[in-house]
Length: 131
Image (cartoon, rainbow, N blue to C red; front, side, top):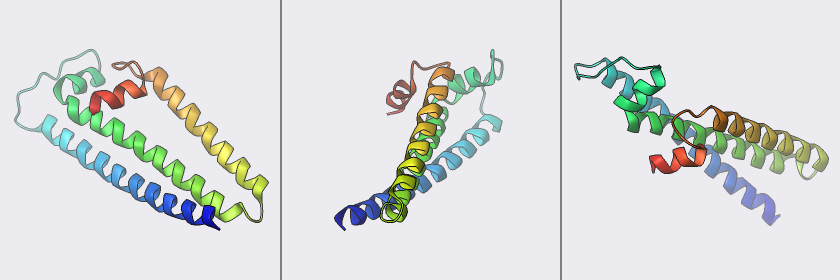
């Protein structure tokens, strides 16, 4: 059906996006570590490590957080599409239950992350600060 064909294309988009965002987050975090350990003059003293990272390597810090979170959301989206394609025909209740469980987990994860952001007002503020 047309819904399944669209879901398969969206699945490929989400899976590829999750992979690319994960690779980007890992590479940027390694660049930030090298930058902090290199001969550059920086002040390692701060109240906490996050404050030091925000002060010394703000773009790298934001890039890692934003791309890692985007990768998680895309991965969850890919799983949702895959569950829809696999189980919507034979087990629609199971499909809805799994997608609902995944959506609730993602909402809880975003809520916990939103409450633990120390230098930003919300996840949206963090993303828009990065962009």
